[in-house]
Length: 369
Ligand SMILES: *Cc1c(COP(=O)(O)O)cnc(C)c1O
Image 1 (cartoon, rainbow, N blue to C red):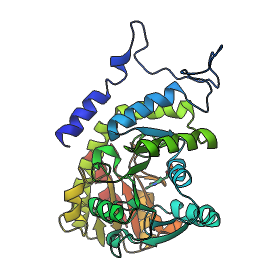
Image 2 (cartoon, protein in one colour):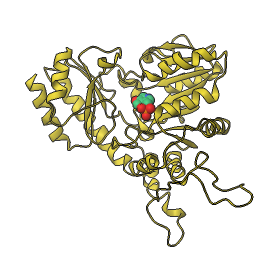
Image 3 (cartoon, protein in one colour):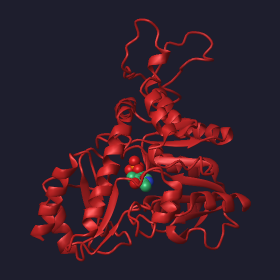
Image 4 (tube, rainbow, N blue to C red):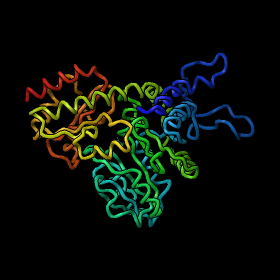
């Protein structure tokens, strides 16, 4: 991790502390209220729970510090993505989505943007810049793509998209602000599902939008206030607690993922491995130029549905579950949701277990297949 990332992590732990008055609680209070004491003129203070809440604001402070950009919290990653689309697009706009990224933004575009007059095209992440971006109002990238772990050149996309007059939105869910910094590489907007590693304990859905463009942030805040797409204070409180340990968890997960990916490439039961940190991975050269860490997701192809399911089911230290980024390692066969990956492709999310114990469990399960 870079020195700036380390100093960002160090000050994150004290963001709240430096603002405390004598006698204030050191830990963040959970503020469950719909309304605030408001006699007379309502200006300048908290008014109503759909407009603001001190627990979300504390999370937004942390996210803003991590992103180095104003950040707006949402009740899920998809709520954050939907906010970007609905706050910034209008009839007649055309947008570009990755064909191999998280599938729900494509479904949202098909089902709800199209009838409002916003059309969309899709392109594979690994050839995302091919063809340029002329005619698009907004270009949405997800790198590495989930689940295939292909990569596109964020700075290159930003340069070409800006020349074409398009906004660049990066879904940075798989990497977190510690692993990759799309705004520093030229993206206009970051969206992320804090449901994953930032919360990290598989017990709250959450999301955020970050941008250094004041006009964009104002529109996103207005969308949240008027549409009512607000996070619950309790979820915000959980995410606040999760963010306090994100750096240590993320470091541990990335380190373990790299070690496990290397060992998997040499295992006879494994047909192929995708991990951007492996020198012979198709994503590696580009990954080293734009990623601060290589992430904690490993893709492995075990050759058949039966072998993949047997591996996931028999491993004592892998939770069979969808989603990723929790303290527990988890895995699933993504073809079961219709993702365009081979039937034996497993997305492994490496957790915080001591790595040698995790490797032994993985090896034992592969040996059984
Ligand atoms: C999970 C995920 C989302 C959606 O997040 P939710 O909190 O489930 O709405 C969006 N993008 C990516 C890349 C994801 O993995």
